[in-house]
Image 1 (cartoon, helix red, strand yellow):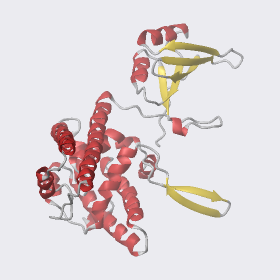
Image 2 (cartoon, rainbow, N blue to C red; image 1 turned 90 degrees about the vertical axis):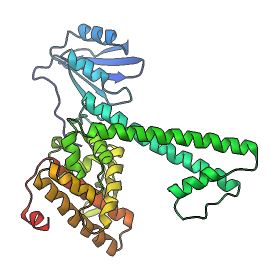
Image 3 (cartoon, rainbow, N blue to C red; image 1 turned 180 degrees about the horizontal axis):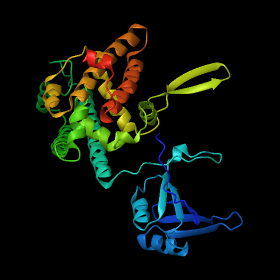
Image 4 (cartoon, rainbow, N blue to C red; image 1 turned 90 degrees about the horizontal axis):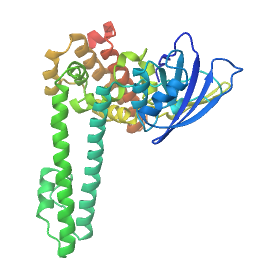
Length: 362
């Protein structure tokens, strides 16, 4: 993950580590003197108690606080920052066992966090719809109702067939009707969220980044908003490799001496962003072309971004075809394509100079 610079001031008077829970906060405070005694204190997790703790620790000046990221979110960070306390959030999975440099979390803005909640809400509803569809299909199968009018499920033809089915037992029929009503409500919620996200994508500050990302094959408005919500400003990553590592798309390594062994990808970082990139990468198995959706975006983006997006199609299609022709499974090849796609997105969003060969390819 990217190295986030600590907010600690030059002159540190007191250091405090917090163990944050839903109802309580345990504080271990140590003055910046190795001979001083460690202070332990447990307080309620309320704004009043936190303000009282800061006063007992001598005020915000010279006080440095850190705590692990967790389910309680960033409210405590924002409260301490508003009080003038230097606060850092530590990534729990990257906390070193031995003394060393900690990895800090890049705290999202309230707007980014709100967008993240909305996009993840849509993902949860899509998962719930998938489960509801599965339950409907399996109940019909148990009662001998098999769809024979096509091979794909949940097309318009299949949905019309499902609505026509009548089960012999009245209780089973009642259960089917309740499940279909639940499925209808999920469809309505997802449609409403899609409409809301489309409106958000057309407004500042999201409109330009969304258009730039939508130049890339496989990146729709929903995908672009999801990546922005999970990753924020890509300029915080110093290199493309840093972004790939943050997304958990780089291979794990088990090496000893001269022997080097590469394993599965690390799967570190935000799984939502990693899933979106892997889903987008599947589109690059097809030959390069500018679709109507991408062509409609081109007038609203800088020419170098559009050129970068097309060069990504050329490069990544060749990469996918090369890997599969050399015996790699399509899923493995797709992850490799997703890793390189992350690099192309980083280069476009940070306005890196376009190499001459990419200009020629575009």
